[in-house]
Each structure stands twice: as structure tokens, then as C-alpha cells.
Image (cartoon, rainbow, N blue to C red; front, side, top):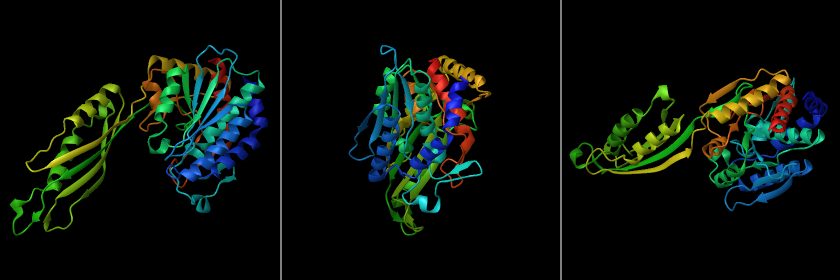
Length: 376
């Protein structure tokens, strides 16, 4: 096992150079020209690592990249590596937040979430090839839309998961811990239509969309169940026109997080049966379960124990974590395969101006991934 680490430590500067290259390829989730340019950068990295690379085109979203590296046992189910390349940062962010590497810390848009993880995955494969290759084949899928819900790439991810032995997700770690459970996400939008009227001259002629919205918010707040891990957030509200007009319209955007499939079913059923609470109101509900929960099944626990054993051989005392955020690993878990997430960077500041990575952790994290793949 330490031979993987030695190889990666010897190529530490090259790893940093690759992170710089990928970070400086700006990739906002909704900017197709920039996304497609970054897809080419990722494809080049995979090609240089021996992968058979294809670009999967999207007409609206950015193109996706699929790499395939055959193993010695062609009949064995492959390992699926997931590493999205899009970020939440708008074009031009580099001007105010350039890539930097100083005092052992790398900074830049997307460096923590999750471009360093992508580079670590690439170098893990290179280390494996240097030490004799792979037993199982590897499919490396880098998608362009994870930050906006994987709206285009979800079918690709699910298709690959159906064929895979396990999925390894190179999202950033949780303070070094691997992620063995993630909440699922339900995203809904309400549109409420009432009837406008003059609030002073004829208030009873109106039907307030705001009053309806307030009642509906109280009702949906009752869905929250902290003991079961279910949270409700009404994050955006738009309503009304003037204080002296009974509001004819109201809108709300709601985020609900669930830790189990049973809770997801309860939430979806509640939203399906939602109805107006007063006469004269039209209530439209759109949305649903965006990502199913990634539950810590016995197979996930078993996969984590393999990772922990590999980590021990590298001097790491790996912990596991359950987090509220979702990832593409959620889709894989819903297909019944074991998933370990958080194999990527050690640092902090996802989606924030202080986003950063502790650079010296890259070789050992890549060695962890290499050793895990080798044992599978």
C-alpha cells in the first residue's frame, strides 16, 4: 500500500498543476460554452491517464465526459467513479478569486467543491496503473450539472450505476471523514392565485393569495420531523403588489430534506394531496423528489470498513459522516449499489469566498482511493 503513496508524493507538484488547470477552466453550471471547454480539459486528463474517453453531448446543458479503463477481469462489474466538474461560481470569478497556492493552501473557485477531488481520482488511477493495473474495470463519469440537480446527467448516472459493483464519489470530504449517508432533497414550487380587490372599499370581494400562502406554510412546517432527520425550509416567497390591494398571486419555493425512503414517501404523499384551504383559490404545486436519500445500508457500511482498513495502512484514522447535502451518490444508492462519498479534498468553504484545500493531503487521499479500488 505505501507504494501508492510514494508514487503520488513524487508527483505532488504535478497534481497541484492539474488542479490549477481545472480550476482555471471556469465552469458555471449554466454556461454551456464554458462547460464544454472544461469538458475538453477533463477529457484530456482522462486520456493522459489511459482512459478511453467519449464526450456525451447535451443540447442545452454542458457536455459530459465518460472515461472507460478496462481491468484484467472483463466479466466483473466495474467500479463507477463520479466527479462533477461544474461549479456554482459565475464566469469571471477568477478575476477576483484567482487560483493560488500559498503556505500549503490552494484557493480558487471550485477548488474544494470539487475540482481537487476530480484530480485526486485521476491520480489514484495513475498510481494503480503504475503498480500493476486494475482487476475491475473503471468507469469515470464527470458531469456538468451536479450543482443544479443533475437535471441532464441523472439518466447517465443511473444507467452506469445499474452496471456497477460500487460507486466512489469524489465530492469533498467532511473535515476528512467519508460520507456514508446523505439526505435526499425534495424541491417544490407553489403558485397560488386568488382574487384581487380594494383593501379599503371592498375587501370581502377579494380572496387573498397571501393568506392562503401563510396557512399552507404553517401546514407544511408540520412536516418537519427532526428526530427522523426531516427538515423544511421555505426559502423564497413572492406575493402581492401593494398594501391596499388584496393579493391576487403568491409564490413560494420550498426545500425539504429527508434521511430515509419512508420519509421521502411521506413528504411526496403530503404534497400530492395538498389542496386549497379557502374558496376561490387555485393552488398549483410543481416539483418533487429531486434526489433520493443515500442511506447507510449494510453494503455501504461494509464498503466503508474496506476504506477504513486501507486508510489505516496509510496512517489515517478515517471517520464516517452523515450530511444534509445531496450528491450524485444519492442516485447510485437508490439503485442498490454501495456508495462511499467524500473521497475528495480536505479543506472547507464550499460555495463560499474562503473555499480552500489543504494541498498536502492530496497524495494520501489519492492513495486511499487507489487502495480502495485495488481491494474491490
